[in-house]
Length: 244
Image 1 (cartoon, helix red, strand yellow):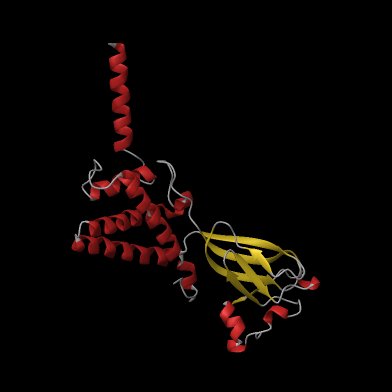
Image 2 (cartoon, rainbow, N blue to C red; image 1 turned 90 degrees about the vertical axis):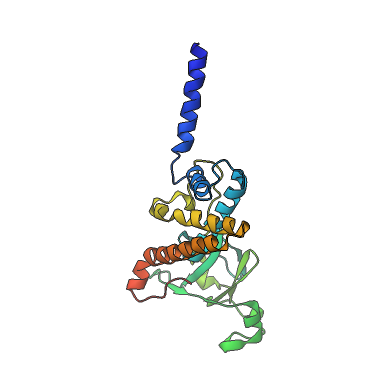
């Protein structure tokens, strides 16, 4: 009898834990998706499938809002042309070079494509850009998982923390039921509902319920616009262009 009571208690505890899952965790967001889709028993979409779409949503939101921001400083070596991009980078944002060791001031580098460098367009360094003598880098380009400096740094401009690289961080996977989106940043808790709307938008399209899909798409896009405005309010107030 005692064993039966213990089993019943454990069963009730587990059930209550699932029903009242933290709404900001992977499990909580999954439950919200299932509730809106009227599929709490996972008869139409499996939990794994919905979680995959939650990951897609998280990356799409970060990409469009630039809400996860990182900065890395590089030691720049004399005459070295290329360096490895940050391993957690989703999108590059800005690179700047220290123009004077005494002031610590950084000057924004222009970003070019390889085609642009080769074509000598817009006052570029010309088709011999790869042969330019080392000096103060003024341009950077990205190719694969590397970025290059043009020209490479001379001895005068080489050294520690010479290059500042700002970028959008690739969000960590929500690998457990207690994982929180957007790398767990509490300032982004208010935007977790965008993940729900994104998932519901796709799932309703699966069912050819295009009107409902369009409704969730509209909620998602409006919510994303508000997110961008609120996160980058300081830049907007300073009359700087918001991310796009």
